[in-house]
Length: 64
Image (cartoon, rainbow, N blue to C red):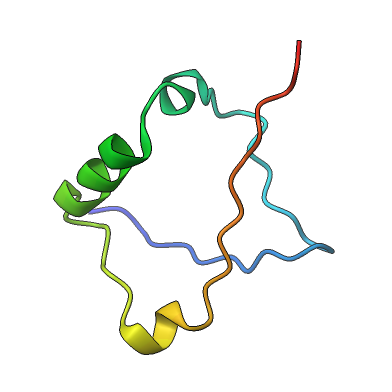
């Protein structure tokens, strides 16, 4: 089993996703993403209290 690493990200310390290819994710519908998340045993659902503090920001595709 692998080691779990937790990192806090913020405006001052943003996540570096430059090595991730989001092409396949960009093709998924919201329903497909939700279904995959629900079927992922490592994806724990948020509690109602946690959801009160969640800020969701969708990644936007660059116009080419």
